[in-house]
Image 1 (cartoon, rainbow, N blue to C red):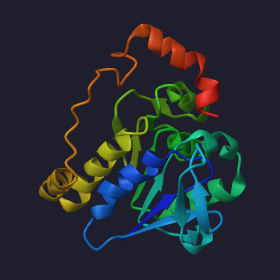
Image 2: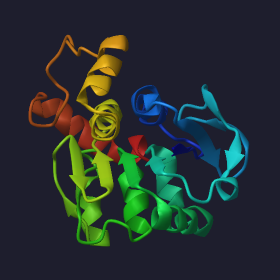
Image 3: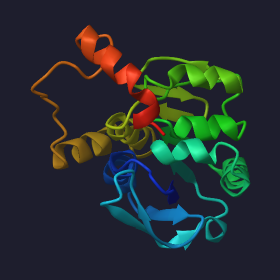
Image 4: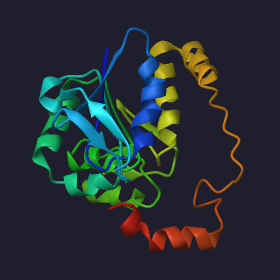
Length: 211
């Protein structure tokens, strides 16, 4: 089984690394980072790079596609090389997945039309523009499409799909091995729980944060 995690300039690191550390532990699976050009690809802050060992054209038909989000997603919404690759890869994939605003790229490629999907809460409603049905759930499975909400939810997506593929025991073993036992110091991880003034502050800065 081959897992292709897409990289692009100004991606969000945890969007890619979360699935890598969970979903990437499918027994005997090959996980590859792919990008339009091989080489280092920098995250949205520019101070961290992951290496794409292969180009998109090198990996035409992965079994699992993982598309992270990040501010760089905005400039790719009409970028034919990536969108065409997503359509081609999706035609042969067993699972097509995303984290955060990566679902907007799947939607822009026409892959989520008529399907339930999620994204970062600040961009969730944008899915409607592409015929998808937005839902605020943390992980959404609709057919072979598995979308995760913002950033950290990529870990949950990875474990969810890992359980489907390798079984619940294996997924729980990976959860235990990575000691994924969230006990955050604050209960402000969603707009429903966070203080209202912080929600509005983030909304007012959304254009800066997500572009």
